[in-house]
Length: 284
Image 1 (cartoon, rainbow, N blue to C red):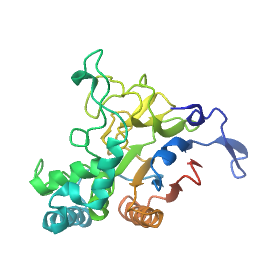
Image 2: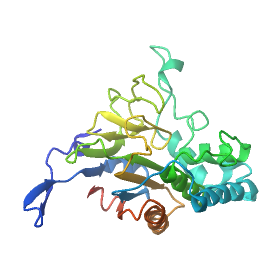
Image 3: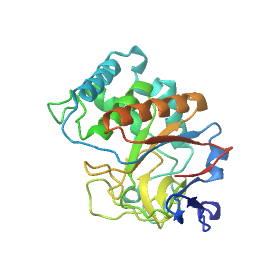
Image 4: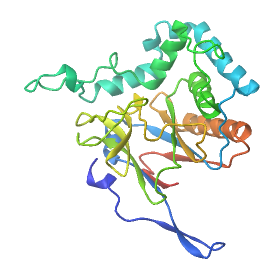
């Protein structure tokens, strides 16, 4: 992450009701990312006081199953990689040079990105559904992990965009979230693992306080540190759009997602923000 992403100055909001200054979390995207990927927009849905139950809610379970059924029936997903929304992420991944350290010798140059080896989250999700993978009887293809995860997956499938949620409960209120290019010394623990690994220099990573990686290769794999759990109450959800997905599309999807989260997660308060070249930094 470059120095622009290392925001040292904290912004503070004055709370008249509490009578004190309260720290605010800063969310920043490296301006170089927008320069390299013109038209990129990231939507944010910030959720507070969510009730995120593990047991399926009938309406949400039907929504998840319906989204999967529609994906299996879509003729424009044969092959999956040909759809414009998914093809855009393949091209983006080719633009940064990546190859997993385990596959590279000490003197071998880094290869260009391999979208077939490291697909975007939406491509992986679509392929999994169309294969009919089933890890639970509750949903034909994708498991109903918890309400927030089920909503995110169903909306991601409906609009064919990457969506990923992160728990904020254990993060410092005056911390920083950032999206940018890796140095290579940041720490990442994959979801479901206890082993620390490091990103390749130059890959796009989502971080907390610049050194803890929450998601590798832009949307490829989320980490253990901020995983959504049944106990998660404060959450931020990322909605990623590359052309042909427009800013208006990202805003519509983000508002749709926020409405569903509020409806099915205990009337949780939600807020939608957009990050773009014109506004690379927001407070959450």
